[in-house]
Image (cartoon, rainbow, N blue to C red):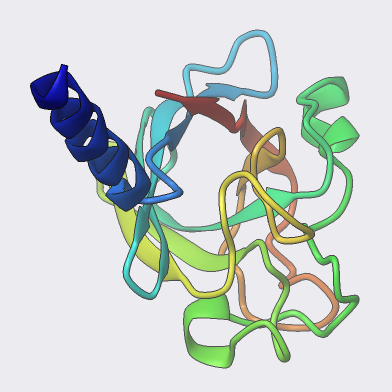
Length: 172
């Protein structure tokens, strides 16, 4: 009996020491038009300093492409149903890792660079944003890949149309 109480105590301590954010987020990016071959994957994990966002895309025209989280979790209407950039504080457009939440949208990740073979990858840490809780939660939001480079202009970076879209989902 005493050994089972000790075991339960140890298990309880272990459970309390597990990070509160043990989940990760994922999204599958698909082209926004029926004939598009654009594809990709997004993996989001909690790390020290914020959320680690890793994006890998393929079949994308070469060059830099703006990539942002948007306010709605829908890719309908060629990605337009995703709404505007995820911007709960109604601040100016910027680059979140550099400018912080006081000077950039919570969804501002800058650009992904795509090589001549149509393949691109991006890893960025987003400070102050989380996956599941509060006004900065990304779960259920859309990620949008734009046709052009985000030039950091106002109000949303002049990155043009939406060529790829995916919805962030929390997974174990």
